[in-house]
Amino acid sequence: MNVPRRTVLVGGAALALAACSSSSSGKFKRYDGPEVTRLQIVKNRRKLYVFNGQTLLRDYKIHLGNVAEGPKRFRGDGKTPEGTYLIDRRNPRSLYHLSLGISYPNERDMAYAAYYQKDPGGDIFIHGGPNEGDKRGKDWTAGCIAVKDEQMEDIYAMVRLGTPIDIFA
Image (cartoon, rainbow, N blue to C red; front, side, top):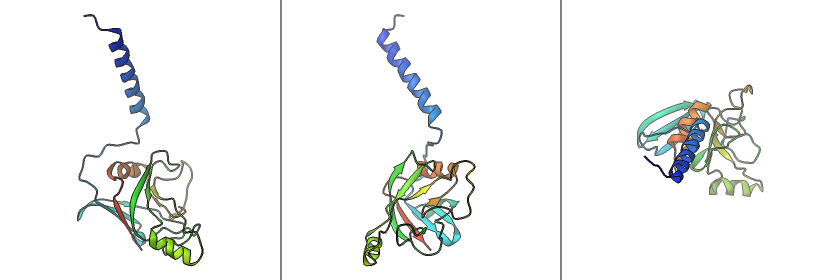
């Protein structure tokens, strides 16, 4: 059988690329379960709940901002927001393994901060843990929601852009 040289080259390149992508993408899982329709954070329970409609799919223990009590109001206050937001971005190159962006600040948050002539802050994410060997306390983020890296891989695979997230005290 005489196979054209171009077919062999293209096939070889495809195999090489597949090998590279499978070895370097171990943190990117596949999720074929029910659609995630809402996330809920209950800060005083230190829990993240993942829902499809009214059905709880999973729950995770979380770490919060280093000032856990009260809603985030201003940049640098160390608090995790409270309110209803959306997952608005995905960051596969996060300093904290993987991350999903939360649409903080919303209009209400911005109006509150503007009244006090302060910056409401931003860049609030659900993300993985700190780097290896970087041991931190119960609530160590600057306002984000942190989970273990393996859990973040699951969450990253399950949650799509536009998913609502409610953050309760």
